[in-house]
Amino acid sequence: VRMMPPPVPSRRGAFPPPIGWIPATIALLVALILSAFAFVPQYVNRPVEIVGAGTGAGAGGTAGTQGTAAQTITTNGTAGSAGSGGGTAATSRIACAAGRNGGGGDPGVSATELHVASTIVTSGIGSGFLGEAQSGIQAAINEANNSGGVCGRALRLDTINTGWDRTQGNTDISNWIGAGGTFALVGEPDSEGLAGAIEGQTIDRAGIPVVGTDGMLADQYNDPWVWPVAASTVTNVHVIAQYAVNTLHAQSFGIVYDTFYKFGAEGALAFDAEIHRLTGSHIQGYDQGKSCTVGTRFCGINSNQGSFQDSVSAFNSGCNPRCDVVVMLLEPTPMATWMKEEKDAKDSHGSPVWYQHLFGGEPLFDDKFGQTCAGECGGMTVWTGYHAAIQPFDAEPAVYTYTASLKSACPTCDAHNEFTEGAYMGTRLFIEACKRVQAKGLRLTRANLRDELNTDSFDFGLASGPLHFGSSLPRQANRGMAAFSANAIGSFNGWNYLTTGFIPDPAPGQDLR
Image (cartoon, rainbow, N blue to C red; front, side, top):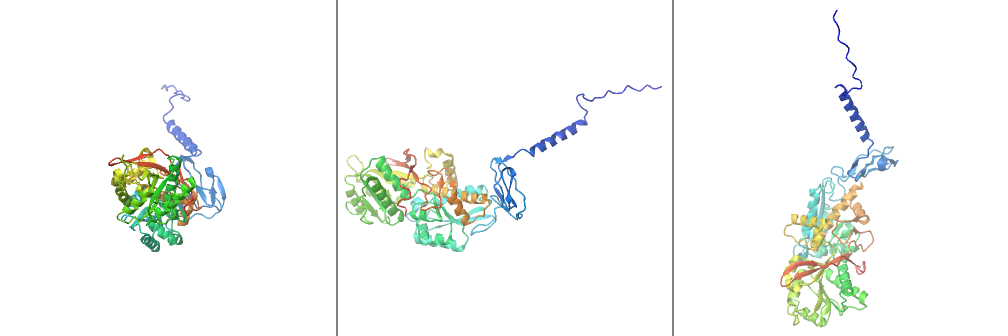
């Protein structure tokens, strides 16, 4: 009889378990983990998307009411889910994303491209301070296109030089509108050409948005289709007047201004009006018209003259003894000419006999002008409504990004020029507003862009504060300005911040009609 081996004891409860049990255990754990994730909110960034579905989706997927558009808007939060119900099913999705941006619509808008335009100034007297603004526009466009464009659309920019001529600018803008291939005007450094288009009702009849203009002239703040990002010339002289009276304790004032282009006369009248509000007195000669007679302190000149010697003598007789504060509302070329013709008007100590403190308008905040004027303009104060690419602002991320983008588009451009910086920020305003229109599930139309610009606030870290336009006119989003002085003794050595902070316009809206 063959003996059988004893039975093998059961391993129930023993360790390690049999090999065949391990795969089953792993499968069970995976199933449990996956089922748990189904109930855990997902914290992710998702594109903002409006889905034309039957019912709305509330937070966390709670259904809305029947027949409304379902909305999924998530930014670092719990994702909502589209509702379901008895509404009509969507045939398309509108979102700020390529392929889902609603396609074409208004002139210049297609599924893949967005066409904009700007009249620029690269010749004539205005080119001295506006000539590089087109590079500011292009810098912002390059940023957008390098990161996917405007909701999947590549930005295409058309420009044409008007020479800062009102009639030519109006003609060029009218041609773009008539051709039907331009959605909006952006940056728009050509204040004179735009003024012609505003006064001729070209802009309003077409209902074409003009976004991010340089803002020098009052008409830009009074047109419902124009959104300026700069502090106006009127704001500039209001702030100068307040600073002169309250900080410098000035008692006598003079101003030299350009009568040929609009910004000079507008600014001169606003400066006198603010001085009158602050002191109760007008500037001597304010009521004599556009001239510069002997003994006047209110001196209007035609900037296209080759020499201003007679006006220099007449003005100096008015500021004798020297005026406490003199404001120069001139472009770089005539300003340099005026200052060189004043070079001998010095006392025995080498100080100018016609002013104690000299202030320049916004067109003079430019390195090239500083180098040209050199020692004659040493100590002159200029103002800007932007965080300039100058210490201490140049270390701020927004200013650093602007400077890098500008230098990438134009290595030789002057980042200190406020019109170039304004053109960059104005173009960014247009781009951001377009994206927000799409993010709200709306088609990119001129009317929807207008409503977005009038409703929201925009903060690019470059202006005196966040930009909020509203719909009431005059519409001023940038109302503060900071002061810088020309550092020049014999030669120009840059600009120094005067630690003024951004002084708000003491009379916002006044003198802008």
